[in-house]
Length: 296
Image (cartoon, rainbow, N blue to C red; front, side, top):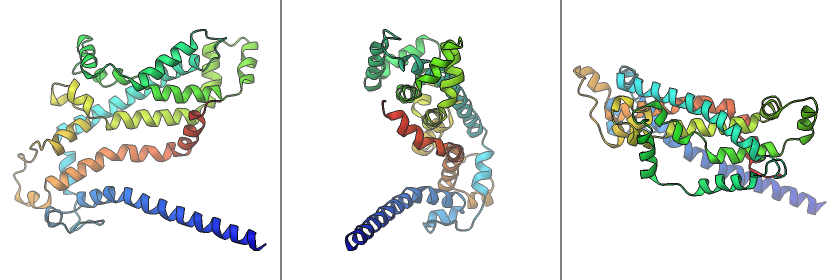
């Protein structure tokens, strides 16, 4: 009894330490975001004085008003929304169509192993930036939304995740459907996809986050700034320090906002869509990662 009590106490103590470490790690991850939010709601003077830490000082919405009055910022946000919508739809179709045949047994799909190794090779080795740029240029995709979508239309990691999830589904369901006359497309649409919601939610989240946060593609594929997606525009503003306050003539407005508060507001607005989407997909996320990453 004493040994059992000691073991329970030890397990409880170890669990408490683990939860404490995870709590501290979570707070450290959240601290920069909370600080940026606090700065975005603070006045220019408070932000410049360094007194803003986790709570806004001299709270104001002036930075957000300024951000939403910027035509270029709103157009870049709309380009990012279109990019994510197109990339998610195209990626969903192509990833599913690639994962389904690769989930077959070699006796059902003779070239399955060869194609699987091809996808695995592409996962670790690429052709390089210059050949990719030349391909996009020669296909006349520069300065179009498709230059941001097509080069990453088939994320290989998502294909591998989904095909392993497919391989873990009961084969009896597929065999029953085939006895009823169902073909491969009907099996995929009626059985595999409805049963794969955790994996599909995971790959969808990966695709959305990757395309929403990607700024480099817009920088190399877009010659005109009017075609920049939101993250590329933010990179030119925050990193390259492009001027954006020349249109402000009101001294009172200048007292309420500064480049720091406006940059913080832009970062918050840019991060908000993913922060809003993630809670709806969170319950599928861990299950999809665990089940889709282990080969049955």
